[in-house]
Image (cartoon, rainbow, N blue to C red; front, top):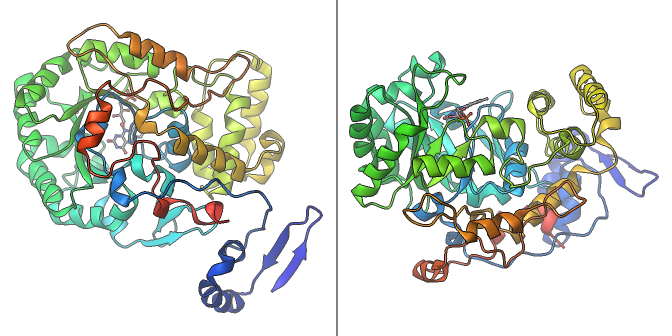
Length: 480
Ligand SMILES: Cc1cc2nc3c(=O)[nH]c(=O)nc-3n(C[C@H](O)[C@H](O)[C@H](O)COP(=O)(O)O)c2cc1C
């Protein structure tokens, strides 16, 4: 083992493979020095920053999602590549109520091995050469895992593989890409309702009740056929249905036909099961979500490309000047949680936002530096001095102190106008003057429906104040 202490007083250890394995066995037995051991096991440096304040101890089932958690929300859509872990964490920090992971085909996750990074708490499901899916315990109460499947048994096995790290599973019934449809998955399920419903039924039957089962579909060309399909899907016992308001043959550049959704929403309400209908398609951000809900009557809205270009779009005051206010933070966090550089770069290249202080020339320089970069090291100048650990701490703190599930867009029932509550909500989420990064709302912010206490009392052992169960807290960051 080679050990040195650098000029900042940080201990750096490099271990040979044999020493490493022996030490791992030894360290696991040494509970009292878990923090130090965790740092050594990861091969990372030991910093002296203070631990996070301990979260209240909660029972695991406090974090169960109910159909109501899918109402009055603004959600991050499933996005392959773009919906990776750092994007989801920032989306939650900036007000996304729930986040969907990218579609992962059932077979892909089945043979993965689950590893936990003892420093960051990041959980990776690793395939032979890469991580297939990564998550962090802090997002678990808000995380929906999306499955691509055309087989009920495989779908159940895939869901069981990840269920300890997620709150719900969603079936992708909308992807029109040939890689999905050629094997009967994604949008191919829309024309095979027997199989689609068999998968959802199997998931609902086999998964424990605290794991929600949901589906994301596209519109069928005929409204009548869409309603028939929706009726069958809702009867499988799902908790929420997302409708991407495009048909299978429509591309993203085609305008979403959100006008068709109101009839579907009314139809599902008429079924009386309390299932949320989530609109998806052409909603840009929080402000735009109001328009979409007013037009469609949907319970919630889900955003994909708006969040791909600015993951803070869930806030009433999204970040501006993203080149300076967001990209450095994103790079730091990605490096710290070991998000693959090429994936990070892909996501960062999508980020755009209103420019206020950053000039066009500055923006171009930053973009050029990004396009040339081959690794995080080559972006050091752009990233500045803030550390990824600080970014993660801030995100965890923001999520723990202000549960994303309370970031609600409340509309009066059967009203086409927004209420005062909603307006007040906007104000409480606004960025304080002179800052770019919106502070999360205070605990007294009026995010909840008036009868929330009554609702909460009906759910056993539910505590709305702290979202993250103790078992889900990142290990090294929270140990004292
Ligand atoms: C980069 C990207 C990746 C996507 N990956 C998925 C996916 O994994 N699963 C899925 O159901 N939809 C996926 N979609 C579709 C979106 O979830 C969403 O339905 C679509 O983009 C329409 O929403 P929007 O108008 O807000 O972009 C993806 C879209 C984009 C842009």
